Image (tube, rainbow, N blue to C red; front, side, top):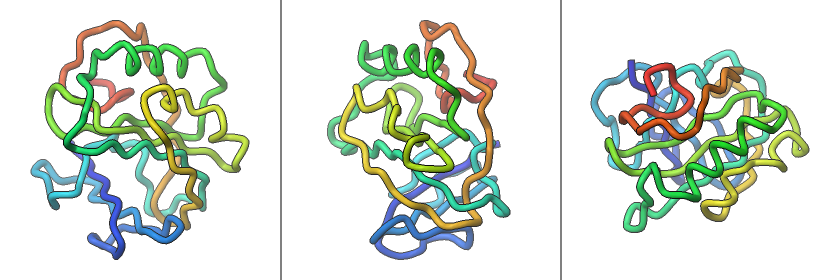
Length: 157
């Protein structure tokens, strides 16, 4: 099962929540990319009954995506394994080789302030309304396995 997330100026899917001046839209169970802006994420992160959240979002420019085994991406994943677990976390992907960003979810600003993916690029801290993000904190390691196309920490990584 694939899940997708997009950041846009207006809702793109039935499942969405305001995130500051923009909207996070999600497609929880779609194999094909539902929109050109959509990026794949761990489906366990999405929850239509989830409470409001604070999010640290790394949304990389599609023209300059690092490989998933880029040293900065590997180091961010390693660091995530040593931090207090967030409410939910997922990498974002667009294909089987590139890292397209991350989603680090907390209940408050302190919960997202330690996002290790800041090592890869600038993050946006957003307040996200209810009905989009749940709780999924199972982090898996080690952080040196080869990337298999699934968003981390999804079980098929």
